[in-house]
Length: 397
Image 1 (cartoon, rainbow, N blue to C red):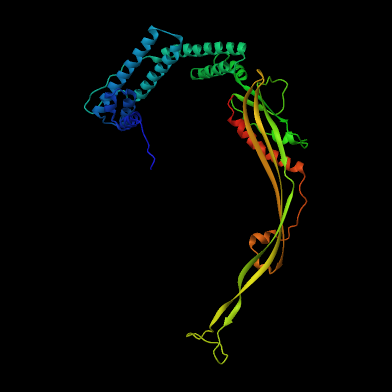
Image 2: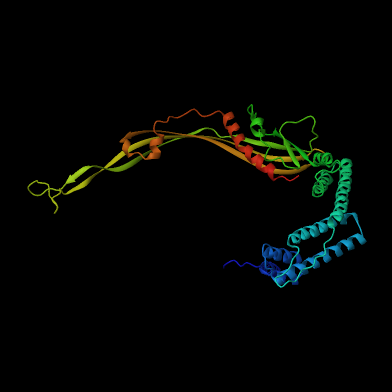
């Protein structure tokens, strides 16, 4: 049965509406109340034209008036029942009015080819914008101060991060405002989760020197973000929030194994020619007078003796995240990695030309001493390190 794909009617209607709007003329856009789109498309079509289209000129006039009236009415409603949270909306509305006026201004006087002159009611937005800018910035600043006070007293990360976001919004109004940069640094510090990464061995083996370093020698450049900072060594000036511990529970090293086998390889080659003779012992000729001959095929053989050696190590454990403030486990994830050592050695008797390329590459190698357990354990630790990094990257704290 073929899979069926169900698309909601709402999705289809929305897509069709977007398609209609994207293809609509400025006049149609103005009729459906999308005044800013109508205005922008009309202005683009009129720019640089000496003989102005009557319909587009009247659309610019109509859309500009309707959009300005709509926005000013919205501002009046917000100011009538004024709340501090309204100021960012008021500021955005004044900015929209100002951008609209800047769009139309280069066309003024706007006269169509029949002599009709469009009329525009401009709003003196600069002063209004300055008032809204100051009040909007103050609104975000006051909210940030409240969130920061909550973060300082509760030691909770969330209000600190909200304070940081509120302070960041002030950049929309001023490049520099009061002590915003100082407060942002404090909010970021209070909102950052500091994570100490370490290793704890709970396996019934003694680990080789340097094992911890192999696992925790991590570059945290790609892991650190705006709200998470990782360290693999404790710093005295940091009050850590979380400890990410690689809890090593099992270390297995297999005994070295060695297997020997013999096998034969063959290869057929051409070794000269075989001529065809007549009854008198002379080489036969073809119609062109050439000797009649066939390739002489010879099968070459070689007997190979191969020794295969193998040894491996496997590490198993868990990555556990502890909340250092409460002592509780936040998360626990199983981890594991393994490392293998192998060696091929081979000798042969017979014709070297019978050997395959793969076998030929192994000829001359000799059996080796098996590596120490410590070497394989450290190699497995190196292989486990990127797995630890990947798991830390997925943790959201």
